Amino acid sequence: PIAEQLVHNAVTQAEAGSEDATNSFTTIFWIPKEYSGAIIGKSGATLGQIRESTQVKVHFGKEEVRMMRPCTIVGPIANVIQAQSMVWNLLSVEMQNHGPAKRPPGSEPQPELESSKLLVPARSAGSVIGKAGSGLCKIREDHGVKIDMLQQAQAPHWTEDRVVILQGAAQNRQAAMCAVLQAAYQGDENNVNLKMLVSGQGAGALIGIKGGTLKQIREQTGLSTQVEKEPIMGERLVTCTGPMRGVLTVVGLIMNILSQPNKSGNNDGA
Image 1 (spheres, rainbow, N blue to C red):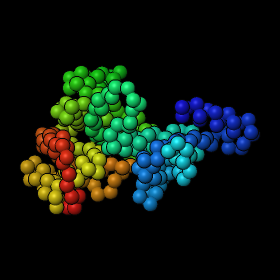
Image 2: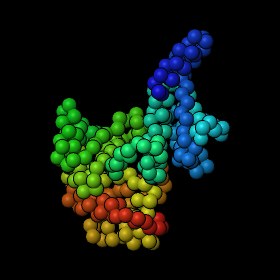
Image 3: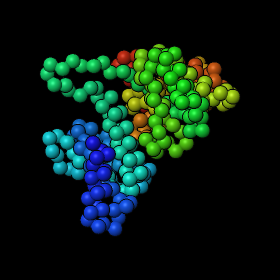
Image 4: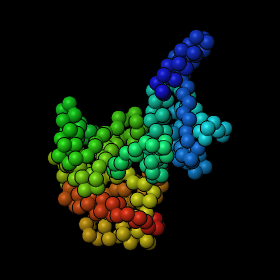
């Protein structure tokens, strides 16, 4: 476990009398070989984002042990925890994109819930969570979804937003997403800022061939919907700003497109 390894390393450093024992910790992740590229990124870009966001040293070893590669993170413990959260988030996205891992013979596979990610302003997080979590609980019960809001430390690259993860059937996630936005922008319904995170394949589906699908969304809603060209930690950001009613219509169109099987498109024209 990561926590145990952090404690062990801290104790080892303290016993060794290291001058940095109070502010420098080391943890090692063993990353499945097939997911290494998602952590490293093109020309090391994703590792660079992790280093820049958390101010830690990150080294990805080339050696393999049982089809696993070591990822070493060194820095102050709070920063190390932030970095390890980013690594785990990347891993979860990559594993979701590649489907479930192989299971031992005889074990029964469990159905995986599809998920959607939404960003809400950090200042509005309390309105979504509710007193003692009552807001999240109501959304969970009303719409039959699993809903979690990540702590700021778990997604430090989103400095002004909190990440909300919804799991369940597409129509349930859509309804829950609308409920989240209504809670986050209560009292400011004319200036709703939609931010969704989608996979690269999902971004291609939304854009469509030569930007045709994205153009249709804009024409049908009268709102400028954008798909960012550069991925952030392996995901693409979809944005739209406008009155609540129009933004919720955009949400419906997006979820309808993303729920269609084998939907793909060229990401030119975003």
